[in-house]
Image 1: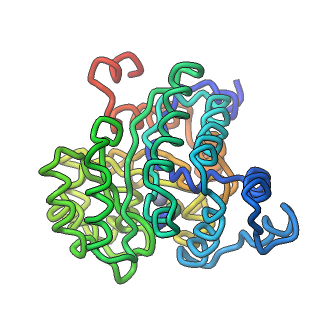
Image 2: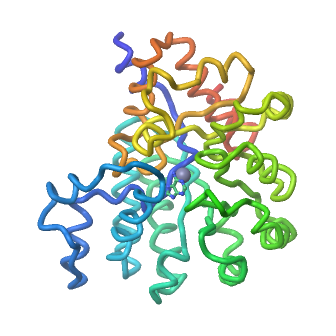
Length: 326
Ligand code: ADE
Ligand code: ZN
């Protein structure tokens, strides 16, 4: 079989996905219209032309603007359902996805609308599409720690629905240490923790995520390659890195997929996984990320299969469920 067919058939996980980053332009216009809101772009084509970014912040500005038309519980349901049907076609079996409550609660959208809309779609996806899931609540790191604490308080009644907290948004200047206390509280409350680190920020941020936030995965983590002691630690602990090749390309974290240091990372025995981050903005879901990197690096089917298996290993599925995929 062709590489693309091989990738399509592989059972896959998605461990680094912002649900707000799956908001396709067509759905964005539809939801804006029914909420009597406007987007400052004439049509889908004009909006898509704006998707050209020199760095993370340029993307985030457009991403938050897009998310601002999400108002009702049904909007969050429709967003999540559209994502699930899409990745179902790509043979994704398990997803551990982020949502950014502050993006919505700061616009006076109730926390419950956001959570319930997303969660009901995830439950329907499990029942109707056979996709298992975990939900991660991510704090926006450009906001202060007090706002993160407030968000954590809102999540406490929903510990049965939210398994972990994460950290995303503008990385440079907002180190993990800024959120040490709120992560400590989240850990005490029984949440797992993850954090974006080493996407644009330095390797020190990865150390902080490990030592101060006690993360069980690093989201991105590319910059670990600057630090041999850190590489050794990540390999020894088999700390998963949730890599996002097309995101890194579109946000100029790397110049060319051909330069993607994936094979080097695998040689260092790092537990690397392939994910899509914000697929509506970066030109592809799971198959396109796998396909892009496989082509650029001329990966073998063995290497591709190992990457897909790493996703299950790095997931929070029970050992029994993991085994069924490995
Ligand atoms: N929010 C959505 N996508 C993100 C990314 N790639 N980095 C940081 N924050 C994000
Ligand atoms: Zn991300």
